[in-house]
Each structure stands twice: as C-alpha cells, then as structure tokens.
Length: 569
Image 1: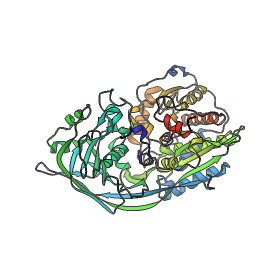
Image 2: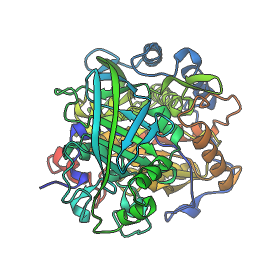
Image 3: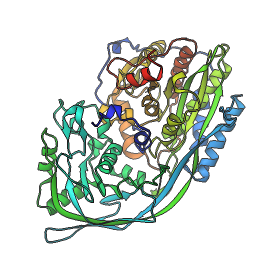
Image 4: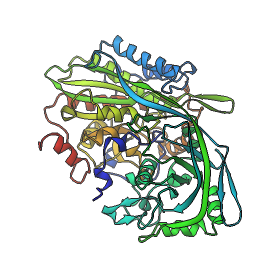
C-alpha cells in the first residue's frame, strides 16, 4: 500500500523540493501561551559576543554585490561565493570537513530549457494559443536534447493528490498514461474553504508543487501543468517566471530523469480559465468541485502540444563546511545551515538583470559567519562539535542540504540538531520570535528560553498556508529525523508595531523577493538580524553544553524516524 506523505521521505522526494525559499509576510497573530511575556521596554543589552549589526552588514554587502553575479551554482558567482565563505571560515581558525576539505561536492545536472514560444491547445473546433512566460512556463527533468508532447489529451485532476490517510484520491479511476494533467496549486484544506480537510489552513506536503510533479510521474503522465493562483501559491506570477526560466539544476539520477514527466510547468489563472472555457467547462465550477470530498477527475476533451530544447551539463556544485571541534563530546554535532545560492543573472527588471539575493540569502550566510565568530571567540568552548554548513541549490529545490542529508559528513544519529537561517528580517529589532513548524520538537523550548533572555515572545508561523516548513533547508534535516529549528523575528517591530512589519514584509514579497531589487540597502536596520543571530548562537551554546538530545514532540511525523535512527533511545 502507498504510505502517507509523512512517511514517504525518500531521497528522491526531498532532492526535488521547492525552488525558492520562503517569503516572509505576516498576518493576524496566532499566539502561544507566552505572547504577553514580551516587554515594551528597550531590548535587553547585548552581551559582548562579537555579534554585531556592522559585521553582518559587511558580509551581506559583499555577498550580494554585483561582483558575485547573483551567486547561482555552476557560474563564476559560485566560485567567488564558496571561496569567500571558505576563506572566512579559515580566518576564524575553523577546521575543514572530515575529508580535509572545506567543500562537499554535490553532483547535479544543469538543464537549460528553451521552450517553444507557444503552447497549442486543440479541440472543440478551434485552437487556443498560450504564450511562453505570459501564459505559461515549461521545463523538464528529462536529460534529452529535445522533449515534446504532441496532441497529449488534457485531463483535470483537482489538486493532483493521492492521500490515503485523508481518504483522498484525485487520480481515482483515471488513466493518465501519455496524458497531460492539469491541477490546482496547494492542497484542498489550505486553498479551499473547508477547514476540516487535510490540516486546514496549514499546508501539507501534498500542497507543494514537487509532490504534484512526482505523483503525476508515478501515474505515468506525459505532463503536468499547475494552475498558478497568487493567494494559495503565496507568490506572484513574476516569481514563477524568474524561478522557472533559464538554467535549472536537478539531482543526478541513474535514469537521467527518464522516470519524470516529459513536460512540467505552470499556467496562469487567466490562461486556465480560457483553457476551461475552450473545453466548454467553467473553471470556477471545476475549482469548487475539486475542493469537495468525492471529487471525480474529468477529461477536458482538449489536447496540448509543445516542446522544449535543452542544453545539458552534468557536474558538481559545492556545499561549504567548517568545523569547531567539541571539547568533551566531540563525536556529537550541532549543525548551523544557511544556503549561499540565489538566482544569478536573469531577465532584466527596470534595466537590472543581476538577482543579488541580499536578504535571500546573503543575510543567512552573514549570520552563519557571525555565529562562527562568536563560537571561536567565546571563553567557554563548546562540549559538542559545531558544524557550519553553507549549502548550494536551495533555490533549485533544497538540493545541497538534501544531498548532505543523504550523504552526511557526520553521523545523523549523532547530530543533535540543525539551526537554519534563511532570509532574515532587515526591519529592526522585533518583539516576537516566529518559529516555523512550531509544535514539532523540543527546540521550541530552547527558542523560548533564548527569546525570554531578549524580552521577546514566541509565535507559531503566522502564514502556515504558505508551507514554509517545507521550503528551506531545515526540512532536509527534519525528513531524516534530526530536530530542526528555523526561527526569526518577523511579526511585531519593537519600535513600530505590527502594521509596520506587515507593510514592509508585503512590500518585500511583492517587489523584491526573487527579483533584482533584493539588493543591499545601507538604510536597513540590522538590529533585528543581530538579535536573531545572537538568539541562535545562545541556543547552540546551550545544546553544545548538554548531554541529552532534543526530541520530536508526540504527533510529529518525524518522531518515529528519529527514534529508529537512535535505536529506540
């Protein structure tokens, strides 16, 4: 029988996770029991640990400069970025990885797809032409010079979900071999109006595009097209355009992608409505039907034809790894992660074609370096070994962290926790500490204690419908059972309140996220980043001085994986 998604964490699944780290907009607060513990006074004075907004700013400024060309893997920007990070670790006196190198090779294939300028929808007496980028994007994981679908029958399969634990099967009775499936973004509980479906507002992995492509491939489909809708997708069409055009990276596989759908892609909501109209069907009615139990997939009585020409390159990118050996329990490890990659050089926006990725994620790399500095300067050295891991390919689908999880440099059963940093807020000190995946592990308690030291309160993710828990590198560790923490202030500005933070976050998502405008700004208030970096340093210090391992909480889908890894401990 097919297992629920929570137990399907094989290497192939995770290696194809989301391209693009989470954006950070906020919403109405869903609080924990310590929300009122925050003080309205000025934040508690910082200890002399060497973590400063000025040093963080300098690293961000360098890593997001035009010289680094947007830090895309397989480009000169990768060479500059990985060399910079390794050199900074060396300056701090950190040791290389167990292979004697500061680098871990990550074998990948780069496919530069050049889709046909149009996609032809035929049937019902006339053709409908969709235009590349305006109406659709298309790509493939098959390593072939040319892939094509010709007169492939179109079928609508709701959300494209087979979830036995929720009693849901959008493919029931449907033979999609050789056909192209059209599905909705997100999952029925999240996108629809019925909060009793799936996990309600909180997205499940079934809502991720990666799952939808994999499920279609398992059913033998020739292609899968996801209908983009900005609200349930949690990002605008411009992000789809920038993230899914040009060269894309995928894990190297023995079959060279032959098991994947030939055509993977997205269509705009407007294009989908025109497609349904061409089929003599109403999109809104089909959408409503897909959000109800008992949905039956339906043929659209149309065919699709298009093609993609590919340039293919198989080589390796690099994770950067540096180590501070522990003093008393050196064979136990705490891992700090941040992804170094961004989107490189792409389509020009307002005359700028370099996607600098200052917030996403030069900020996380800067945090990684300042935490490393704090550990090396601390009077008390950590009992456990601290591993600093700057990973590749997050924007392409968590590729670097997934590869590490499948090929760990240090035993996973001896890895205490992963502390991840991705797209930190540059809007000044915050009253809150928002924890992605709150309620999953005892790391919540460590975060709460560190937040209390700073006069802050804990919040769960305020936009769980965006599926942020699945969208950054901490998930690669969670899926193999290692407790993982991804937390930073993002909801309530200490000086300017909640409305200010919400406005700034929404502006970033709309105008800077995965755009060339994500550039370093000397006017930023990095006091909040300093605050978050110090908090994660304190969490790591506490973990490094203990003899116990933090556990997954009852009900977490990762608990059984960890217990098996630890031999039942």
